[in-house]
Amino acid sequence: MDQPYVIEMRHITKEFPGIIANDDISLTLKKGEIHALLGENGAGKSTLMSVLFGLYKPEKGEILKNGEVVKINNPNDANALGIGMVHQHFKLVECFTVLDNIILGNEPNNYGFLQRKKIRSNIIELSKKYGLAIDLDAKVEDISVGMQQRVEILKMLYRKNDILIFDEPTAVLTPQEIDELMLIMREMAKEGKSILFISHKLNEIMAISDRVTVLRKGKFVGTVDTKNVNKESLSFMMVGRDVEFTVDKKPSLAKNTLLKVEHLTIRSHFSKKAVVNNVSFEVKAGEIVCIAGIEGNGQSELAYGISGLQRAESGKIILNNEDVTHRSIFHRNEAGLSHIPEDRHKYGLILDYNLAYNMALKKYHRKPFSRHGFLNYPAIYNYADELIKQFDVRTAQGSRTSARSMSGGNQQKAIIAREVTTGGNVLLAVQLVRGLDVGAIEYIHKELIKQRDQGKAILLISLELDEVMNVSDRILVMYEGRIVAELDPKKTNVRELGIYMAGGKENNNHESTEAN
Image (tube, rainbow, N blue to C red; front, top):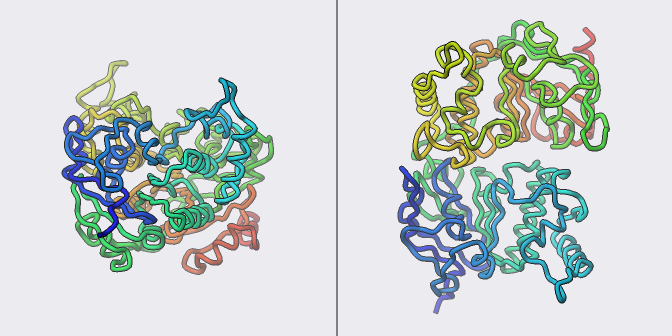
């Protein structure tokens, strides 16, 4: 007799107001398997996994573990069954230490006294076994997102979970961290742990998974063995049409300089080290300049400095021939800067506002959205409805949907829609396609080229090397806070780019350009 599936979800239906997020979906997971869950933004992937983890109760359907029906009413029930989940947006207490976050809710004690020494020893042993080096005494608010993900994984391992759910685990990781995570997942599967892996990245799915289940608009499309498919067939299953993986664009016709950064230096909030060190470059109308680099080399702080989120210690930021180095964020927006931020929850959206209000954040003080200090609500909602349709932002209740309730990919599309339509002529885009599916990426990249061809100056900061090579007209590589290379994407390749990103070599093209 065949061994029963370690997890079987049968005919799961989950509804929210105005939408059926999961419509009669069935899914099976084998012991020691890495099973990928693929679908467009808003297809119902995270909802289905939230049902398995006990965050949502389905209206219909049942869940079996090792052939027996189980009831999962909350995450405590899931943990008791050995089910753990790393969420797309981490569930960590930022002011707590790494150690306290790992044991939170499962603190072993002896007569009411916490056995901290024993706990520390056990976690250090786990971190060594799986290659998850971490500072247990650091506060979560002071560590990188890659380190925060390690904390989430150690939380699952500490609880001895053997069914592991990873929701978009690579969305916030560097290429090197992604490779490390893949090795860890393979090691876990060899040990007999079963992994459900939500991702939009087809290369990763092809590299790591044994089987793939595809969802589209809340419905089950099919389950296939990864070895029997390719990227093209998976993308067709996901979006229902052929997807172009390369961007068709004409050569850039760069004109006058719209954004100029001169000898900019920015210090870290934590170490006081110069994380942006004497950086100079310019972006012209009609070109896309991409800054590439491994995370932690100053790209985030550079974006904060240009947008006004962080103060520059020295240097200048010239926007449309105006020195805005010491001007407010509002003034920079009014002077022509649009900003798609790296952290969409912290800087991109007001999560408890509805989608219409979020869409109007940069325009609410202008006509026709307000007059004599009074908001014109019909104009705001009509504007939001147009953007929702144009950018295919999928929501339960249209422009009245709470931003907090939307999927990460649709939150990102909403921010992109707002920023490219504000009327500014300089666009700063950081991790533009993070969390987006291949169909959305295809559309957004075409929109980016369209904006370029209309004369916008676009500064793109990206960890995605395919994106860097595909859409940029010039590539600037950052390493340890400095620009170490200026490259032509038509004359370089991913291997050479990676060497510069790792600090393996440096060229003088950028310096000579600045000197002329």
